[in-house]
Amino acid sequence: MNELKVLLLSDGRPGHYHLAEGVGAALARLGSASIRELRIDRNSLIPTRILRRALSAGLPPRLILRLGYGVGPQALGDADLVLSAGGETLPANVAAARALDVPNIFCGSLRDVPPEDLSLVITSYERFAGRPRHLVTLKPSAMDPDALGRPAAVPVFNGANRPQFAGLLIGGDSGLFRYRTEEWQALIAFLRALSAAWGTRWLISTSRRTDRSVGEAVFELAKDKNVVADFIDYRWAGPGTLPKLFGRSDIVVCTEDSSTMLSEAIAARLPVIGVAPEHHSFKPEEAEYRQWLLANDWCRCLSIANLGIETFSAALGDVRPMSDNHLDRLAADIKDRLPQLFRA
Image (cartoon, rainbow, N blue to C red; front, side, top):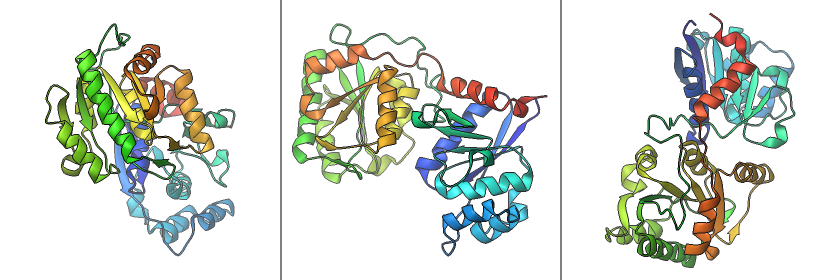
């Protein structure tokens, strides 16, 4: 197969372009692929809905790209496929595919754009499974579990088969999540208790939304090397540190405020336990996604209030991690949907 030239349109938001990069990594599993990223910024004077209407009205795609995003003909270059994620990139995605006369893939939910304007829509929400040109999958990630050294067959861990190292991914307050100080204290107390009972040591990472006081509390905990084997403080380490943690962990505990962290841990073929505060909720489609993860037995979830040695052991024993490589799974699905991309 000839090299597949992919034009990735990015809005600069990590939560979006990382999804597109995950799709790009899956495409690379099928043969030679080059990913060229083009940062686009919508003209603030032209709302996204106007750009979507311009597409429906059949305005010239290069005009839409120039007026809506400041993208000239030279910027598009040559490509075999247009790829993007996030609603701000959707009109640009469709316009670029029309201008180049190539297929396109979008990661996300369509708004006022017919499925026929996309070659494939990759979503993680089962409610869209019956829609034309939609593919439901684990949230894409470029992380390769094989490159991390993760085994394909992961044993069942619980009180009878205790993990040597447990990863902990700490998020923080978000739109629908609110943690109380007492809940953070209870979580830290659980870390100590599990280490004392099982001999498990923790590999802990905070994130950009972790409150400073929580980071400082974990820093103090990390002084006890019988409890914490390694502490990655996001304030100093920055992004991109999770592969190191995943490569060393036997299991992962993840605060449930981050769907991305939860999904990446699952993609790394790790047994995953999500923990949540009392005051939290999900948007309907996200609640369905979490149920889908649970139904596949890739994770289990506990409230911090119910987090104890026995409840943790029981939940952990129910988890059956993903056994294949999520990138290969996604690659096979894309090839099945868009075989024309991979013909010699």
